Length: 201
Image (cartoon, rainbow, N blue to C red):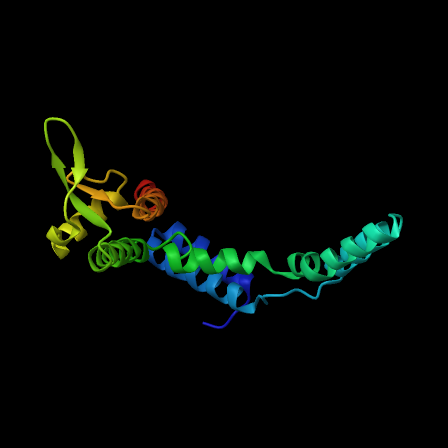
């Protein structure tokens, strides 16, 4: 359907009033998708240009050496920061992660995909090793003793926030495990929010 944003919003409310929440979600996804496509990565709006000109005018009052440094900082970084359309980036992340908050399948696919990617990384690059517990110490055994299924098991437990103690990351791989755990927390929180939104309505 080709129509302006106002019509899409009216359709969404109409579907909700009729109790057709799946159609409302599909309409909302289409509306956000069209809105995102119309946005540009860089803005040429006058308000951004005016802000930059105002900053440059304020830099003139500084000593010449400091002004030259700040002018370089302005031309190299500030102009890019001011002109970059951050809302398009947020919309893109929202689309690929959870379908603008109306779809659960992308979240599950991300969780499965990340589990497999990290599992293959642990297995191929010998990132984890079995834990050997003796009476005096606890240490990691040979990484070659870890199968692909052990790596997948460790990856899944790390993604849900509680890595199994049967395996230990080796060296800098502990930071990779930490990154996977953080991503897992974010995806689980996103999953809970979307599921609750779908259930309580």
